[in-house]
Picture 1 (cartoon, one colour):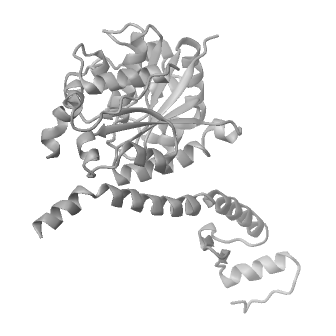
Picture 2: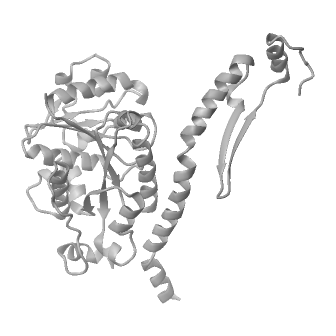
Picture 3: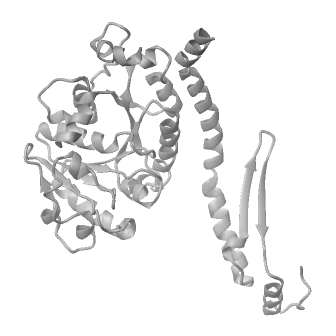
Length: 273
Length: 99
């Protein structure tokens, strides 16, 4: 029996980087040789397939498997670059109520049998889809931007993780970690943007990582290759790789880009002026 | 004027932090006990429905919290004819004139 971990990547607010983070962390974990499956829960608005560069390879999806119309191995799409990385796509055509709690439970159970890591990419919002994505998770990654509406929605999601998940209902603790994305050190230093400490103090959950605002991210989604697959050593790629190591239990200090003289500042200084 | 505006825009993060702290302190209290209100609402619905046929949407349960005290407000809107039916089913004298 594998020691599999089911992790929900969630945020409440849309557009903060859930799908990008799911793909980037999934690829980073799989590079270490562990079997990883990234699962798209955004029924009707799937995008993980696109970010993973597998949009033309989807034949069967999560709902087909959940409803028993296809077997799990038929629906799993193996990544062409990392052979321990798999994708289970969401349906693009079915409506969002097509997933049932029982169906999701069964599919997650089957995934646990053959994967070390199962990363569930949650839809935005606090509706059924988001609740199903977190329902059977062992732990959660809360993705937030250093921005008021994102932080408020993250607080709300933390409340739901502590009340609506199976773990919460059983009275077991739900481990939650913050992944702060689109962080701009220069703007934070100049008092224009919430600092990492501000967000940590407000949300009171441990920090998984800080992903700097970076051009690499858009480029990665443009070409359908998660930033962690890229050979170049950009700051966002390094930040995701380190976050993945922390997720794997390693102690890696969070390299918070410091004032003025770091290369982060040189990179972002122009924009912050 | 322009210098003032410049300084103001540069130090907006502390304002964001303070607004969030105040807002979330409030929302955590307001949204936290929502489950309790939901539980109360469900149990009240079940209890009332045993005796009176009524529209579940006409039941409102509200909990308000202030520093000094909390109040639970329950409002049930029932058509007068349903009171009569319910009352007669309970075997008491029907008061067709019930408000």
